[in-house]
Each structure stands twice: as structure tokens, then as C-alpha cells.
Length: 630
Image 1 (cartoon, rainbow, N blue to C red):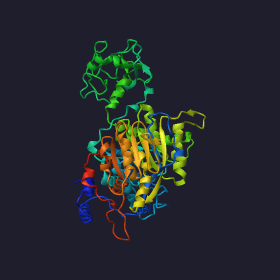
Image 2 (tube, rainbow, N blue to C red; image 1 turned 60 degrees about the vertical axis):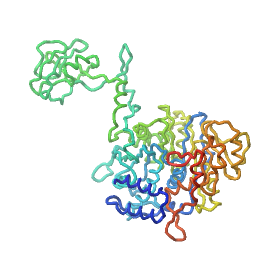
Image 3 (cartoon, rainbow, N blue to C red; image 1 turned 120 degrees about the vertical axis):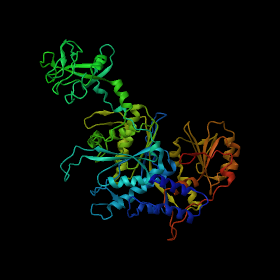
Image 4 (cartoon, helix red, strand yellow; image 1 turned 90 degrees about the horizontal axis):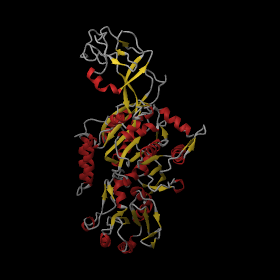
């Protein structure tokens, strides 16, 4: 059994009904004890994790920072300010199994004040340096696995200090697709034995076999290189490889590759050598006799069939000679047509290393945007990684080590280039004002436009909406008061989950009291949140009188798991009903440690009894999206 199978079995055991806590713990213990190979580290508690023993994270929008596009179909991008462990916990409810691509650039743990653990920098002399980093990363990767779609892809940038540990840690949760070295900088003399020029990108998947083969993106062909065109058709092409290649060994099967080619001025040209065809005519050949009798790359028959695909150029440095063995200025190249090259690239795999997109590109771009931030990844790199996954243009992308916000910038730029509708979620803390003054400010300028220090105007990518959220908390103890507080605070979570943000003040022609219910409708999705369960019957009557226009997502407060199936029976064909906060508690319970009560060992943290059979199997469409409830 591999690591991924073991992890999936652990999750299945956690979902089996009818097991006592003692039985479940025993099974899980047996699975973990049987591990024969892997990383071992001393777990180091995080303050944020201890905080979530007593409080549950939620998201609250900061409406004054929202950038709302006038375009009706503008993708909604999300920026979350807060510790990424808190934010990932909330996303475990809103986006479980729904993220297509994750890119992260976590701390490299170089010991040079780049990794903070519990509010302190971790330096090279810290005895628990690697343990702290592994504890930190394992908690986040565990939730990332829950968020990633079955065919999703995870990219992680990392340096030399933690590459070995990260590869093994990643394989605790995922299946490895590749380890891709990347040229990150031109290098300097700062190293000891080698000049530092590279870092790495680890590529993982939940299920490798479900990930489509990667493809070299055609967008990365430099079309500016196709400067030449056919006079009659206007077909664009560029100068390709020379037809003469000095390294070819003429005595290894090249009997048909030494012949005359007629140049535009009538000169018969041929690679250098001592043996020449007896007839001075285009296409006449002679087998090479020694290694000095050089040859063309094409055979004689290929030349006669494809001579129209050759390009003749003059060069004083040409190695070719004429039929009198006199040096000629002519050289011969293949024509590489734009349409053919795009087709070739579209069917080719990307290289398993990346030599383009050095970090200096990211630095230069931020300088143009007048944003101060060191070590920003280049936007071209993130565009490239998203593109090679060969996924559709409406995917969801997540970066929970957002830094300067390059991933969102790349997503918006890629949408602008190919008409896509990709959505991006960014998460970062606000240490030293990074979220407000760097991540948000950068992408605000991308959307609204900006002026470079040289006075050049850069147009904004206005067809995008950006919404700003902060992590907040409600008490975790599952008493009735706290349950109501969680549901009241969950409205922003539900908007994010269903990608619907347009709130209406009335429902079915009746004005709403916000304390009782709120209604959202953007023309595609309808969402009704009922905070006061005593109003359920009144809403059922209103829904019964409404014309069917797609199912309404109805979230209703319930002190248990009962979703008021009997009440909604008359309108079961018009609604999808979910009981809150049970659905949120369930999602959080999959990623949070159980609470310790009065110093006792962790116990099951399920505050709700199971629904009755009638409720769970009744006529209502209790729809479950992939990875979670409706």
C-alpha cells in the first residue's frame, strides 16, 4: 500500500458510521504503526492551531476594498488577509475538492530570516529548524489535499534547504508527478562550491492517473520571430535549422545525402569535401567516400520533394562550396511556418526543467508598478505553470502563500490573453502590511491601471472583480448561542462557496428582515439564508407562489441536523436545502484537531445528532457537491 492509498483509507475510516471513537482510534493506530519508511519529525505546536482549539475561523468581507467590475460576467477573485492555516480551514467548507490548480511559494527555510514560526524567525542554529518547518508545512498540505480536485495539480516552489524533506512530506499526502529544476537567477559568487542559480518546482496530484498529460502552451511561442512571409500567400515563417550540419558522420548511412542544391542565382552548392557529382545539375548526388565529404541533413529524395520549404541566405561565413569547390556565400535553412510550429507545440510535452522566467523579471515588473517587495516570482512563470496543465479556461486557482500576489496577476493576464474565466483565491497574512500595501495594492493597480516611473500608461484589466476578506472567529464550544453566531457569521462563507454576491432586499415580493433572512440572486444562482428557523413555514409559502426559475439554495439554521424536510415538502422541486451550522462543523472537523476538554484526551467533536431517516432520504434534493454539502 502506497502513502496515497494509506491516506485515503484513513479518511474512509473516519467516515465509517457505527464505529465507536475507541474502535476508530484503534484502526487508525494500526495503520500508522505499520508505516515502514518516511519522514519522522518532532511536532511543534503552532499558536494559531492552539487558538482554533477554542475558536472557529470565519471570513468577513471588507467591502470598502472591493473592486467591482462593470462586466456582468467578470470572474470573482478572492484575497484573504489572515494566517493561512485559519483561511485554509474556512476553505475546507467553501471549496473542498473544488480547486483545480494550487501554486505556493512557501518559506525556503534558509535560516536567513525568511521563515517565522510562532512570531519568531527560525535561524540556522535552531535545533528544531527542520521540525518546525515540517510541522508548519504538514498542517497546510493536509488541508490542501482536501481542497484539491481529484484531477487537480499542486505546484510548490522550493530551494535547496528543504527540497529533500518537502518531496518526502508531499508524498505523505499526494502522488508525485515531477521534480522540475528551474533557473531562478543568473548566479553570483555567493556560494561556497557552486554558484547558486536554481530552485525547484515540485508537482503533485491527489490522483496522478486522473491528471491529463501536460502540454507545452502555444501561447509561449514568440510570434514576433515569424518576421518573414511568402509573397503570394502571406504565410508567416521564420528561419529554421541549417540544412547543413557539420557534426553528421557521412559514412554512417548517409549515401543519399551528398548532392547539389541550386541557389537562387543558379549556383550549385554542396557541403565541403573532396568528392563531387559527375553531372553539374540540381539534385545530382554522389555517395561520400571519406569523413571529409560532408552531407546535408535531408536525403536526396526529401530535398526533391520539399525544396520549396528551403530558405537561401547570403553569409560570408558560409561553409558551403560550389561545384568547382570554391567557397560560396550561400547558406540553406528550413522554413519554419507559424501555423505548423503552433501545431507541433500543442502536441508536445513541456520540458522537465525551466530555463526561462528568471526572478529578475518579477523584480522589474514590481519596480514598474512602484511596489516594494523582494523575491517576487515572475508572472510569466505562473502563467506557464497554469497553462501546461492543459485545463479548461474556467478553473479555480489557489495560492495560500500569496506574497506580492503574482498568482492573481498571472491569472488575470492569462484570462485577458485567451478570453478565459479563471478564478483565483489568494491568502496571506498582513505582517508588515504586506496584504494591504503589497498584495492588494499590486492587484488593484493591475485591475485599475497604473503609470510606470517612466510615465508610461499601463491599461487596467478591468474585466475582473476582487473581493477582500479578513479572518475572524466565533467560539468553538457548540452551545446554542455559539451555533447561531457561527451561522450569522457564515454569510460571507456561503457567498464565496456559491459564487453569488448580489444581495436583494426582498424575496418573492416580500421585504426581508436581515436578522431573519438574507437573499442573494445574480441571475445565475439564487441563495436564501434563513437565520430564524421559526420563519421556515412563511418562506415555504412564498416559494410555493414563485415561478420555478432554477432551484434555490436554502440554508437554514438548525440546532441539530434536521433540515426541515417536512416543512419544505410542498416545494421540494424548487429548493436545495442544507442545515447549518452542522455542514460547517463537519467540514472543519475533517481538518481541525479535536478539542481537549479539561485536560482530558481529545474526544469526538460532533455537536449534532444524526438526522432521522426521513430527513436524509426524503423527497428534498439534499444535493451534495463534490467534497461537501450544498
